Length: 300
Image (cartoon, rainbow, N blue to C red; front, side, top):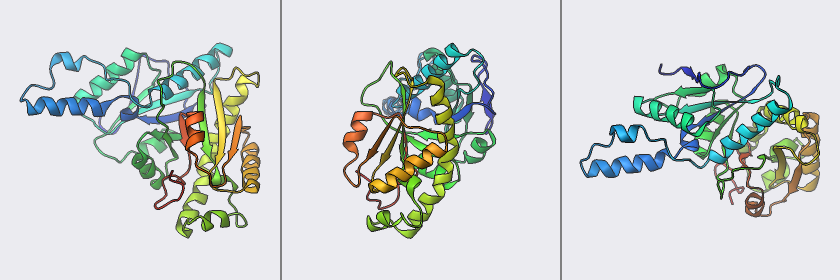
């Protein structure tokens, strides 16, 4: 079973050719770090860390739990509006720990919380790029910036899960596109160059622009399912961290050309982005490497 996608027979299978397939790390959804600390403390006391009682306990909710619940609400609403809907989120849970205990407890935790996760991928290493590509994954998500960078380096579209300040039980799924790369062209690259981005960084960011298109197009199509009456369970936003207003306009035109009309747009022109992030509390922060670029001034 190592290195293979495992189906979750407890949830209804989705058409992966029509669905928006996303892969999320188990360490983002569940608090595996807290469990590992507990095991370490028990080991020091020379106790048996893997008792039957512990094995039956679900993992505690992790930082990205609000995200997975928001995705579930979107799917439920779409099916409520149209029982034949195929444009749904199809979630693959990815675990880099392939031990039998982790497998069992992750699967049991998914059942315990009633999560609509259709597939699992358990691997003993970091080489997860090819399985994600072969399973039509539109976006790989993690709260770990290193995971995101590794995926991007291997050609897998990836974005960071923003850690929520509160565990929301309601509200829309909020996707924030940090879209400086969307407005880049030969004429508009100079603002980022002046902010200290190297030529290699600019080339990497520009190349990543294409990877955003498929996911943004899917979000635009899904967003239109909800209409514009204010009751949407999917909210999309654009944030331009470093580019001037004309580049922001270009980014909006690019997204519209892809079929995505964002709900809100913010042109910061170098101002701190922390207040906007604190206000929006996005679940997905899709920044295409601007935040994670080495020595990037986009860090805040």
